[in-house]
Length: 225
Image 1 (tube, one colour):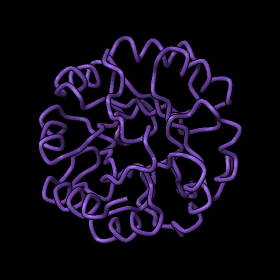
Image 2 (image 1 turned 30 degrees about the vertical axis):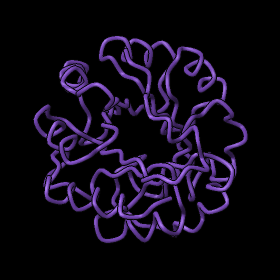
Image 3 (image 1 turned 180 degrees about the vertical axis):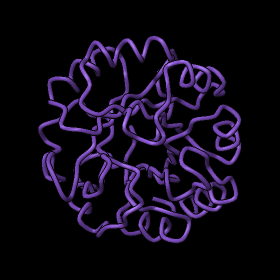
C-alpha cells in the first residue's frame, strides 16, 4: 500500500489546483479513463444500498489497476473498524471515507493505521458542518448536503456557501450536486482542497461519461486556490 502522496493538502498557503475525486466507479477501464482524464483520487463505494456498490473483488481489480500516485478511496457508511480494515487489506485502499454517523474514535483508530481519513459532514443532518473539531484526525472533511435518499450520490445541489466557515478551518472536500457547469464557481467561492463528484459525470449508475469527466476536471482545475 502506498500512502496518499499529494503534499498539496499539507501546504494550505501554496497556490495549486484543486484535487478531483471521481467516486462510484464500478469498472476497471472506466476508472482508468477517469485517471487519464486527470482524476487524482478514485472512489469505490462499499455501501450495499448504493447503485454504485462494488464487491471486494471488483474494488480490488480497480485498485490494483490504478497507476502509482492515484489512490483508491473506499467509501463506508456506519461500518465497524474490523470490517473497514478487512476491506482495506483485501483491496489495497489508501483512503477511507466515513460517510455516515461514525464516531471520532473510529476516525482516530483508522488514522493510526497509516490511512488517510476523510469524514463526511452534512448541511441537513448530523454530523453537521460545524462538527469538524470533534474529528481532529480527519485529513479531509467532506462537506455534503445530506438530504437525499442515499448518504451521497443524490445529484442534489445545495448552498455551497454554507461550507465557507468550514473551509477556513479544515481541509475541505466539497461534494453534493457538483457537475461540469457549476464546479468552477463552487471552487472559486469555497476554495476547497478537493472536490468529489459521482452522479454529476455519469451516463449510467456507476458508469462515468468520460466527456463529462474531462469537462468537470478542466473546469475544477481552471481555478487556482
